Structures are given as structure tokens and as C-alpha cells.
Image: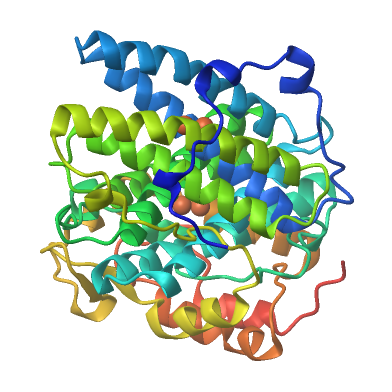
Length: 431
Ligand SMILES: [Fe+2]
Ligand SMILES: [Fe+2]
Ligand SMILES: [Fe+2]
Ligand SMILES: [Fe+2]
């Protein structure tokens, strides 16, 4: 059901305070929750963190008393929403189990957006990042099995494949190459703006989660794996945020933040099958509609423009979670060898110049070895091979895909070669 969010009153911010019991009491059961309920919970935590953080940054650089008051009142509400959502994760969900949830968010969210993104260049960037998070899910799945003895399907519930992709050691770029062309705020659609802000929020929270939790494991190789993948998430934040037009005013950005919250909550509410979470999404949608009305008034007053010019007259759907195996397989088969070009464009491995700036970065960070390569060696030592969950065709194609997706220069000294992978993949993994 779509409606014009600028025409809805929602709930006023002064009615959005809740008791500690309401803020913190709910949690789901990790064995019973639907995997896409968990991905919604993970994503909306990231959305609230971004909303809260943006408002603090805005408050630090404005001297407008009216806006300061609005920010002061609502950033506490965003923060309380964040607590409710993040703390729905149960105490017995391990860091690695949560991590598989984060990477499932990245894969299935990015795949959904790529298929609904009207801007070709933005879509290409989504597809580029998609293959990297897909590889992270594979590396972390090995550790979830080795450290906690779990089948990755306990978390991803057979909705997302677990399979090698563009190897993580090849995700380390010169961060300047990650910078993309930004959209034009005057011509970009609300769908593009909301897609990007939603994805930036998710990637930023993924980075923060690894930053805060990777050190909770004593296993040296696993700690280093978190450090390595966390750094890729930093690159992802840099890449996706650079798609945003920096000439949007702060009022315009405020409007877009509230609109993104409205759209994501509405999307979650419509899709939710869990009786405990559905009313939460519904209530928070009403809160965000309340924020949006005020942000729209401030925009009209200080920018003298119509909010509809920025956000349109209807909702967009940035986060419809569903299985994307077919789409991901298609991108994997065709784009695994894609790399960042020198002019904010894309190229492929065989066209990279010898002085490609990312080679320097890769040589330095992997000079003692790449933990994400060692991950596969460690599980192969124990189980004769890696753990993958995919169609028979993808499994069969895996060595060929590795050959196509692995750079031949600047490789880590412990790189698992294509021949080694070929030999290993003929064996069977006994769960
Ligand atoms: Fe919020
Ligand atoms: Fe990732
Ligand atoms: Fe990512
Ligand atoms: Fe909000």
C-alpha cells in the first residue's frame, strides 16, 4: 500500500517517549526467528544509528535555535528506537552468528536494490559491492562452523548461498579509487537517494559491529579476519557515501534521513511475519512520519522549496528481503573479475595497468599473509575442504570462478591457489 508520506501526521515527537521496560524488554529466539526478520532487525539498527549520528553532526555545526531544539528532541527518540531494535537480538546469539546475519543483509539487500535501481552507474556500483559481501559471508561461515560448530544455514536458512566470490584479499583498494561519481540532487530519483542512504547506513553499522566485536575472539586468525573484513567495510562506506550529492543542504539531508526512515519502516512493516516485531515497525513508522512533517516544515521555511522536489509524493521500497540466489549467481558468473578503474569507472583484471594503485595497498596489507586465505587453509586442514552451500552448478564452477576472479599480481604469500582449490573441491565436506 502506498501513500503520500507528506500528507500523514504520524505521532508527534513529544508523544514518543517510552518507559525502560518498553524500550528494552523484547527479544527474539535465535532458533525460531525467520532469517529475514533478523535481517530487518539488523538493518533498522543501522538506520537508527545513522539517524542519530547525522543529527548530532548537524547539531554541532548549526546555530539555528529552532533546528537545534528539533534535533535535541528527536535524536534521543532515534536513540531509544535503536535500543529497542538492536536489543531484540538475544543474549545467546554469538558474534559470528550475528555476523552471518550482517553479511546476509548486505547480500540480499544490495541484490534487491540493484534490481530496483533506476540509475545504471549506481546499479553497477551495487553489483560491485555485492560480490565482496558475498565473499565475506563465505569466509565467516567457515569460522562459524569451526568456532561454534554451527551450520551457516542455521542462520541464513537456505535463503542465501555460501560460496567463494571475488576473494577478500582482492577487496583492498587504494581508498581514493573507491570514490565514485555522485548523483545530481536535481535529477536523481527518490528511489536512488533512499537506496544509497539505506545501504550506507547498513555498511557503516557492519563496519562498526566488526570494529566493536572482532576482538571478542581469542583465535588470532579469526581476529585478523575480522580486522581484514572490517577494513573492506570501511572501503564500502567510502564508496557508497561518495555516490551522494555533497551539495545537498543539511535541511535537504535531514528531510532525506527522515524519509528513508519512513520508507524502510513501512517496508519492514509490510513484509514482517513475526508477531512480536510487526507492531514495533508499525509504531516506529508513525514516529518517523511525525519527524518527517517537522523536517518538511523546516525545509520549506529555511530553503523556500517544496519538499516534494526532493522526496516525491510516494513511498519507495528500499529493503524487500527475499532470496536472491539466482541474481547473485548471475552477477558472480559475469562480474567476478571486475575491478575499480582509474577514472571512477570499472575495468577487469586483465586490463589493469602495472601501476594500478591498489596493488601497493594489497602488497602492504597482505605482506604477512591474508587471514581470509588462511581461513580456508585452516578449515581444509580439519575437514579436507571448505564449507560451501550452493547449487550443483555453482559448486562445479567454483574453481573456474576462482581462476577468473583472483588477481595474479600482489597476491598474499598464503594464497590458496586455483590448483589447490581444484584438488580440495573434489572432496566431500562431512558436516
Ligand atoms: Fe528513527
Ligand atoms: Fe561484508
Ligand atoms: Fe560491505
Ligand atoms: Fe527519525
